Length: 24
Picture: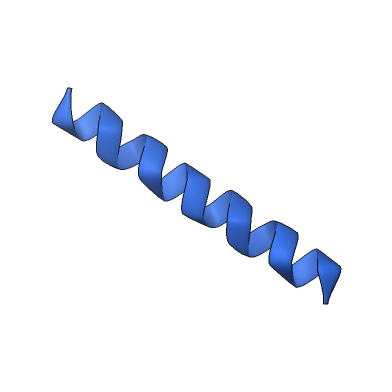
């Protein structure tokens, strides 16, 4: 469960960074 939570958090951060890079 902890591993799943960490993986989801990383995915969210990666998605946020990708969207931010696209906006710039």
